[in-house]
Figure (cartoon, rainbow, N blue to C red):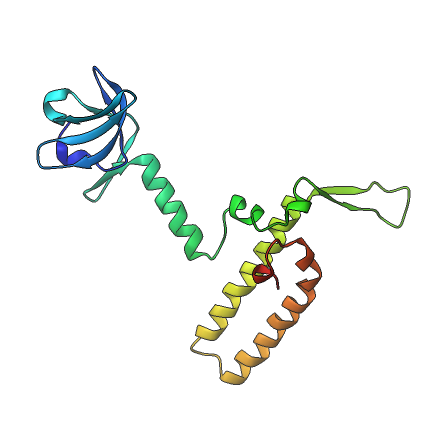
Length: 176
C-alpha cells in the first residue's frame, strides 16, 4: 500500500500486528495504533492493506465508512435536521422511556400508544422544518416584504400552538 493512500483515522491491516488505526503520516512512514501499542510503519515494505472498503471519487480516496458518515452529516446539517440521538438528549429525563397514550371517545375503539421519544422526535422535526421554512421565506427574492411578514405570522402562530409541548424539553433554550 502506498503512503499516499493512507488517511488519518483509517483502519488498516498489518500482516504481523493485525488491525490498526492510522494516527500520523510523514513522508515515508505512518504511526499506527495497534492493540499492542503505536508503531511507525513503512506502508509499502510492511504489506499494509486497508481494513475497510475504500471509495475513490475524482481523485479523492478515503475509507468508505468515513465518506458515508461525512456525506450524511453534511446532508443532515444542510437540511437543518437533527440526528435522532441528538433529539432524545433534548428530551427531559423524566420522559425517557415514557409513552403517549391516546384514548378515543368511543370505548369500543382501540387506544394508541406511542413512545415519547418517537413523539418528541416528530415535534422537534416540525420545529426544525418551521425554522427552515422561515429562512426560505426571508431569503426569497420574489416575495415582497409585506408577503414575508404575512407568512411569518403563520409560522409564529404555529410556534405558539406548539408551546403546549414545551414541558417535554430538558432545556428552556430549546423550547418554542
